[in-house]
Length: 221
Length: 213
Image (cartoon, rainbow over the protein chains, first blue to last red):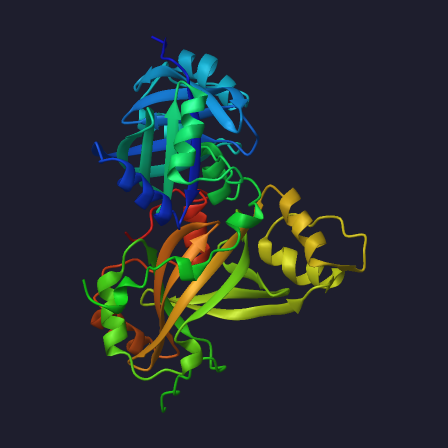
């Protein structure tokens, strides 16, 4: 069954040096909860207005409805859980990916079968395995999140502000201290950059090591 | 035969190498730093940005470009799980078409593109890489910390693959037994040897395998 919820406007950033924003968020409010979860993202090298992921065995597709003042409005559509019928994969998932659907040998696929027999053999498809530790906050009426994520084994951080009202998101951005020059980067865009599926912008191509204090091995834990 | 004295930054016989990649080698790195002998100040801390050219059809040649220079290493052999790599070619941009034809593209093991110029700039070469679906250019930024343990050249590094961070730790030497002792001393005996090429392929999703942790 396909269900929908109210689309939200979203602003998201990724980076290794987000400490000043994280500190500001902690100053503004208390953390509400921390959750660990893993997700599998399906990606193609082409620009698509979809965010397709499988989380805890459930597939959802977010469609980019519109962009307003640098914010993206995403409409999540729950596709269903695995095992999933080939017909749904054919008529919903592949059109969203924007690539031709293969011929399916099974009527129904477990997640493992889908990844092994459908995704991994398709040269147009890439998979990102993402493990997230998500910290939830509420700032100016917006769902706000900081997260440590692991993408195919690497580490990076992300911060997201989202709400149904775009004005609230813009206000929360200001409260956290994120300026107007900062690029809004959604998950598929970030993952494609990490995985080399799209070109890196210059600012992602110049790590300032002195800002990143990671030399923890120099003194024992 | 007497062992060759390893010196950081100097040319030696082809070295064997143990390297692995993961998110956390805190304990191994701590042990490495405590067991290390004196190392030249120039290798205490080094930073570099390189572009690796990864080929879907090749696991035996490792190509990287740094400061406009191309360096290809080729896999020679594996002894007791340690890998030996030898330099295959070194070149500088602009690079002659015949070098691309005879050395570089054969190392990628991909179809030869049509070369209609006598030499190519780095930008032109990167455009050829971009247009080939079997090749991928990957930005690798490194913050490396050098050590010397059991007369093996060692390092721990923060490595940013297209901006995402991973940690690598390694020991290399002409002497296999010295590396094995070092692996034992830093408690990485059961950890998989993962070279740069394999790590990048795993991180970029070309290979569906995990890193060491």
